[in-house]
Length: 136
Image (cartoon, rainbow, N blue to C red; front, side, top):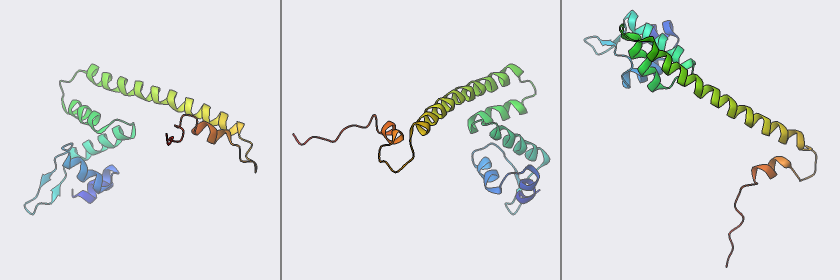
C-alpha cells in the first residue's frame, strides 16, 4: 500500500503518518524508488496509534504501548499501569475543569451584563495583578 491507501484505510492524514515515521513509531518499507510501502501490520499499528491518541495518550505513552503491543511476552500489568496512570491524569483534569466551570459559572451569574461598567468577571480576572509601578 502507498501512503494514500494506508491513510484511507486507517483514517489518518498522510502528514500524521509521515510524522509517526519521522519519530520512529512506524517503519514502512521503501521501494527501489524510495516510495513508502506499507504492509497490513503497518496499517494495524497506525489504527492502534489513532485509537490511543484519541484516548489522549501522549506520543511517548503510545510508543511504550506500541512496544508492549508488539511484545508477545508482555505482562498485561505493564499495560494496565500505563492506562491507570493516564486515567488518574484524566480524573485530575476533570476535577480542574469542574472547578474552572464552577468559578466561571458563578462569575457569569454575578455579572449584570448591562450598560454599567462594573463587572465581577473583570474584577476577578484582575484580582491578582500587580499594581502600577511607582516613580519613587
